[in-house]
Length: 71
Image (tube, rainbow, N blue to C red; front, side, top):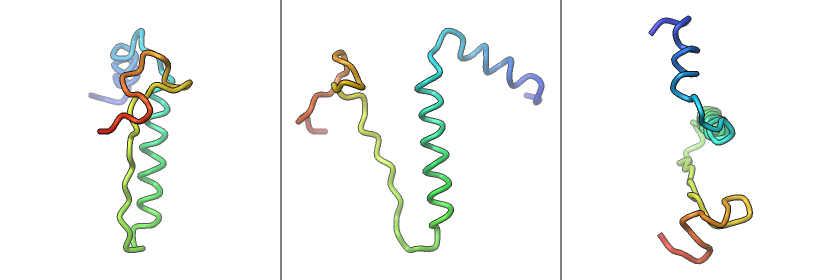
């Protein structure tokens, strides 16, 4: 896919979807990638944990996981 085609393909793929979660995920991925690169030589393992979609004020009442539920 050439550069001029990329924005159109992205718009087509994301049509009708909310962008907030997509941008949040992209930002978090970039933050973790930058952090891991910056601290690559410190001898520590970096681990990003996704807490999932939980029933909270932010996740909403219809989220699948509740507080106290174990994975």
